[in-house]
Image 1 (tube, protein in one colour):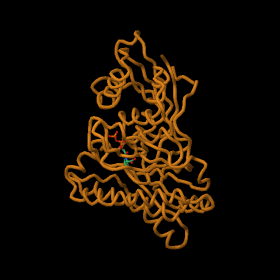
Image 2 (cartoon, helix red, strand yellow):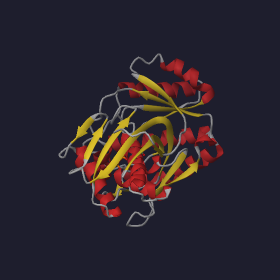
Image 3 (spheres, protein in one colour):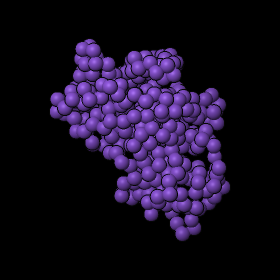
Image 4 (cartoon, helix red, strand yellow):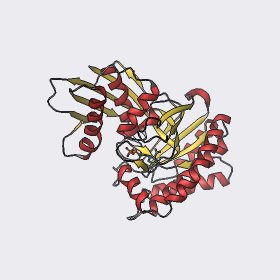
Length: 333
Ligand code: 2P0
């Protein structure tokens, strides 16, 4: 009853922000993302009677009962897995990310997609990919999408029980070979407000949340059309506008949620200037200070050269569309 899996993180082009059901993790709106090759969570899980309690170790640190990571994320998820699979054993989970934790790089997306995939094998559940995405969703919303590779849509679904709230692949990773994302790390610090609390507060208090919901379906349509046609301008413009609308709801939340730092603003301004000068780039930002620049492969070296002038940047990572979650034989314990 032991298995390991690897799952890449994903970057949303049309964002998920707000839940209609907190316990089942059902979103208010559908979302679209691209799964990113090479930035991943590697997770090993083992169920067994030798474990008297669940054990969770992330990046070498053990999280115990009483911590948010254990109580709010791992324990809730494992209790659901036990109830659903009718297996009563406790589990040990060891997980490693190859990117900085909780800095707006969707660590819970990669983490729960890898964990769900490993559990499926460890407990012989024989779940389909759609069912796996529903299982991953119970750990963290954005994990729903990381089960699949390439460009992915998480369809919000309409059913109360969430059985139709799952992800589908729009196109596989090699469909659009020259699509690139340059991830600009403007800070490696942990963010102060987790997405989970942030989105709840936004739904409750931002006067702009209704406007967000009213326009998101149009963004989904445009993004999907742009992806299918490999229309970089349409995808980039839609993603950038959608990101700014989401951040407008965050900023107008009470108390305000401002994830940006000075470096974030500097990269935003640079992208806008470059575009005016003919270098076609767009930006998107999640629940953190990092900026992801969307560009075409032929422009990567020019963008990198220009990024060197931005002194506030800690690091940049070049990424491309990547594979979905998969089993690995390499166990972490
Ligand atoms: C997204 N984010 O679509 C959006 C954009 C952050 C900004 O999904 O409560 O960590 O575990 O479902 O998945 C972050 O939300 O929240 C997120 P939970 P999650 O990628």
